[in-house]
Image 1: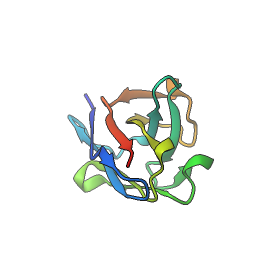
Image 2 (image 1 turned 90 degrees about the horizontal axis):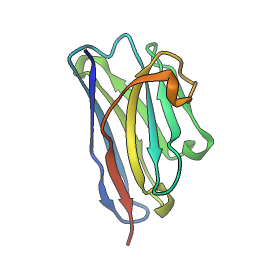
Image 3 (image 1 turned 180 degrees about the vertical axis):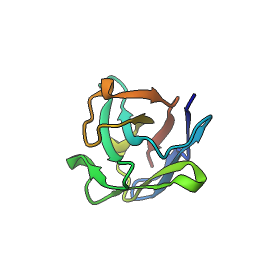
Length: 122
C-alpha cells in the first residue's frame, strides 16, 4: 500500500525559496502520476503541478515560472521547488498519487499525503 509523506515546508521570507519533498513508502512511485496541491486557509484545495509516470510535467497558471516539479523514482521521491515565494503562496501543500495528470480533480487522486505547511511572511 503506497503512502506519501511530504516534508520541506517552513516559514520563509518573501522572495525566498523552498524545496518540498514527497516521499513514497510501501510501494514504488513508478506506476503513478504525482500531483502537488495546496490549500490556503478558508480556501479550497487547488492543483499546482503534476508529473506523469513518463516524467512529463504540467503547471497551473499560478505556478508557471516559479515552480519546478521533478521526480527521482530511485529515491521514491517527487520534489516541488518554489522560488520567489510570495505571501499568497502561504498554504498547506499536499502531494497525491493518481494516473490522470494533468487532471487536477481531487477525486482523480486516490492517495494523499498529510501535507506540509508553507508560510511566507516577513
